[in-house]
Length: 493
Image (cartoon, rainbow, N blue to C red; front, side, top):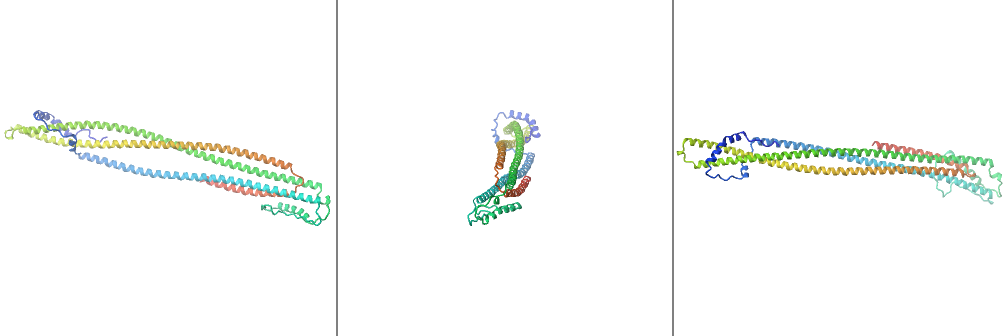
């Protein structure tokens, strides 16, 4: 790791090289006596103290590590804020999409209700026309029966314009309706007067044959026009319903395509993130193995250096003990020759140097021990980080797999829904065509079954009802335009 000195200090190596012959001399001189017991390794390593340069080096390293730690914490906080903001925006966007979907569903329901109301209105107008025609037919039959039988003496018959028990639907009066009312009031006025006794003649009460045929012809023409207008209204209504269904289908297809594109983009992004995570895991695993290999190599080198230092320490202790034993066994200074005293002085200086080297060896051993402890801590931390990274990667992989399955299920559900909607649209078109054919058949039957005694005013009333139907249709068109405008605003939102 670059934290351990690769060699001993120069002064210590030089001193050991110079003292090696002397050590052999001490062993030969003090071999007669046994050396004292060597203290244990832990006790000897306890005397070592790190040097100032090593302390300064570790202070710089610790300061660098603290700075990197603070920088990483700041980056982590910034990333956390960005991620929370992104999550909030995604949540809001999802809520807006749900609201838009609900509004579109409500708009579709409104269109369905609108078409139902229009169909109901057309049915009411058709029923109203049918009842008016039936009423006029009944009045004509009553008048014909009265003309054939003749009233009794003093008998007077009155006709109400509207029966009291009939449900009245107020409608706007037009010129044609006024004309129809006037024509209806004519026979009422005649029948409302007091009739003389006796049977009337046919020439006075009934119209001539050409006039009756002309009136029947006009009635038939107006009735055909009325039925054609009703058929046209029904055709327009069916066409608008089909157009609305097609427009709704187009909108749903566009939404499904947009959702499909979003899901595909998310899948691509998640796939890229998964690939990046795989590459990062591979690189981090490779770095971890490389660091582990380097740590083991450093441990081997440190153990070799430690053994070498301990051997040198034992040699120093041995030389020191032998030097002390030689001084104790020697004769007094008064009988010692000058050469012996000089040799003892040199041995004392060597002893002091060896003590100094011993202290330095203790310091280096303490330093190596601290480095071993720190490297073991770092190795355990790296292992824990590797385990945590594996757990995180496994959790993320599981989550991504779950999301992928969920997206796939949603896509399959959308495809199934689209197929069902297409089938429903086809069935609706078939039903509308069948209804159109039924209406044409009914129109043909009505055209064939027209009687000769129907009144011309009924057809005028039917024409007036067609005019009112067109007005209501215009109002429905305006309402439909407003609905389409709201739909466009929702799309822009």
